[in-house]
Amino acid sequence: MRRAVVTVVVVVVLAIGTWVGWPREGGPADPGAQAGVVTPRDQDDFGNPEGTSDDVASGDQADVPATGPVDEPVDDQPAAGDPALEVTAEPEFDESAPSEPVEATWDDTVRTAALDAARATMTAFAATDQTAAAWWDGLEPLLTPQARPVYQDVDPRLVPVTQVTGDPEVTDETSTLLAEVAVPTDIGPYTVLLTRADGAAPWLAEQIRPPEGS
Image (cartoon, rainbow, N blue to C red):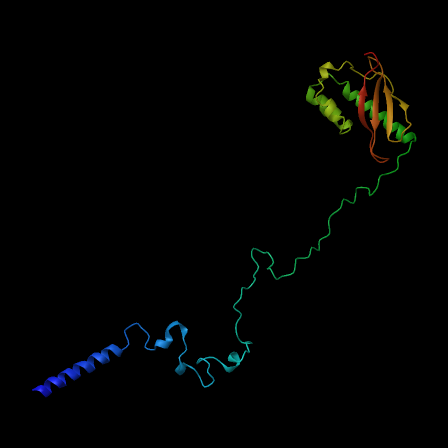
C-alpha cells in the first residue's frame, strides 16, 4: 500500500515538472529569440547569424540596400541633390526703341512741327463749348506727362479764350529741346512752351500762358 502511494506521488511530481517546462501558447519556445538575440545554435560556423553571407559579415556591403533618405522631386521642383535648373531663354527687348537718344537740331521741319503743335494745343484749349470730358480728351494728348495733372481739373467754362485768330510764331528757339511759340487768340497772344525728349520725339506743351494783363 505504501509503495503504491509513493509511486503516485512520483508520477504527480514528474507531471508537474513536465508542465512547468513546456512552452506556453503564443510565446517563443526559444528564449534567445526574444529581442533579436542570436543564440549560439542560431549562428553558423563563422559566428554569424544564420541567413547572412560571409561577405556582409566581413564588411563588404556592396549588396546591402541603402536605408538613408532618398531625395525625390516634389511638385516639379528639383531634388536637393539635383543641380540648379539653367535658364536658357533670352530676355525680350523692344527692338523698335532706340538704343540711345537722337540728337536734336533746329531746321525748317523742326520749326514747322513746333508751330503745328502750338496751334493744335491752343485750338484744343479754346474749345470751351464742349463738355469737360470732351475738352480734356482733346487737350490731354498734346500735353507732357508733367503738365497733365496741372490742366486736368481746369473747368473749361472758366477759360476766357474761345478761338485762335492768327498764325503762330516761334519766339524762342535757343534750345533744341525747348521752344516758345506765340499764338494769337481772340483775347490776345498766348505763349505755349513746348518741349521734346530728343530729336525723334514729338513736341508737347509744358505750359499754356495767357496774355499779360488778362
